[in-house]
Amino acid sequence: MKKFLILAALSAVLLSCSGNRDQVLKVYNWSDYIDESVLPEFEAWYKAQTGEDIKVVYQTFDVNETMLSKIEKGHEDYDVVCPSDYIIERMLNEGLILPLDFASIPDEINYIAHNRSPFMHQMFRDINPAIDANDYSVPYMWGTSGIIYNTQKVTAEEAGTWDIIRNPKFAGQILIKDAPRDVYGPVLIYLKQKELKEGKVTLQELMHDSSDASLAAVESYLKGVKPGVLGWEADFGKDQMTKGRGVVSLNWSGDAVWAIEEAAEVGVSLDYIVPEEGSNVWFDGWVIPKYAKNVKAATYFIDFMCRPDIAIRNMDETGYVSANGAIEVLESQIDEEYDAIDLSYFFGAEADSVHVNPVLYPDKAVIDRCALEHDWGKDTDKLLAMWSRVKGDNASSMTYIILALAAVLAAVIVSKSSKKRRHRKSRR
Image 1 (cartoon, rainbow, N blue to C red):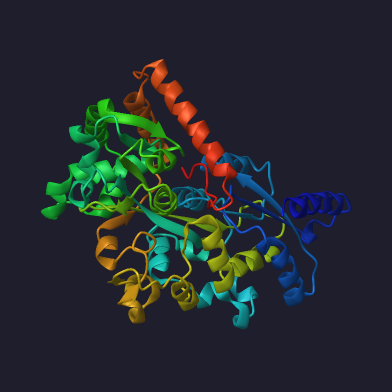
Image 2 (image 1 turned 180 degrees about the horizontal axis):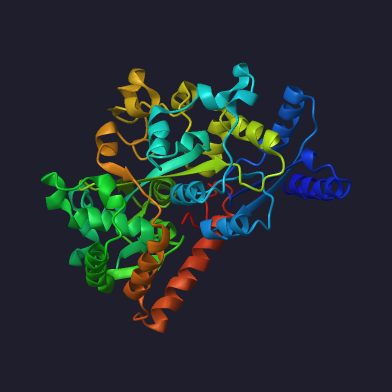
């Protein structure tokens, strides 16, 4: 596949030099976030559907803001990119993405329209009440934020609250994502439980809450948590959990699936739970940037990614959950080992009792206490400043050395295993 990517890039250079940019599709996606064998298949499929040649130039990024900076400055003419929810919201508000021309795709192959999940459609509708994001973007992968915990040392009841990260029983064994947005929301939800139960505020309102009072409350709470934190981690937390060095990790559902499987191979039992207080839902989606040069091929590419068999392959390769609502996707995940849960919110009424992994697809009762994250706009700097004050530099140099060495060792072990699922380095 690397050979394919190199050849595609060389072909793109040659085509660009000869002025044939309309035969090049530039895709910008997260690292390790696709089954790369689908790229040459798309080229063949596009040729069959349109009679036109296309070469995919595939590049990756590890940080949302890196991608956004290139789009904002107009220095790159990417045709398709895959930002996270809050970045899609920011790009939409700033006029940086083009509307999708669904009508240009023949109905018989319009997988976007045929396989849209009602849940994801509503999530995208909630991004901006004034602009329907469904007209500008298509969901790709999604998940929740929650707690990965070692079942041999932590009970489900203990892990069922966000306040576990402050539990002195697990001091020195707690890992927290170095992702201010994904930590702020759950902590604020925990701190606002009384107001939520009394109906004085909603989860969605909390996801928009960037007030100084709320920021101060979350900062105070996290500073109280800090003495018991083993590490603020971008990607090594799940590895530490599989090795038993951490017993509690505030993490994403996609990483939880990977960690649970890897830990089982070495006799460590992990599980994942969305705390009772509520949580946030995240997603990534495909968009066509303002400066795209090949809108037609970009539209067909997004449609191709929504074809059920392609969605399943991408899901299996990355370990994350496809946002595709096709019944074939659901059927690919049926496993009688699990208790039946209600996924009618995602796949429709016929999926009200299906046997699937609840870490991948949460039961409707769990989703009912989750809300979508939102972009803070100019207030984002306040969040980052708060996060910087919380983390500080109090830890000893030896602590950082130990954690760094552990992370490197884990990475080496992971890279040597042919059975490991690939995963992104950093979502946020």
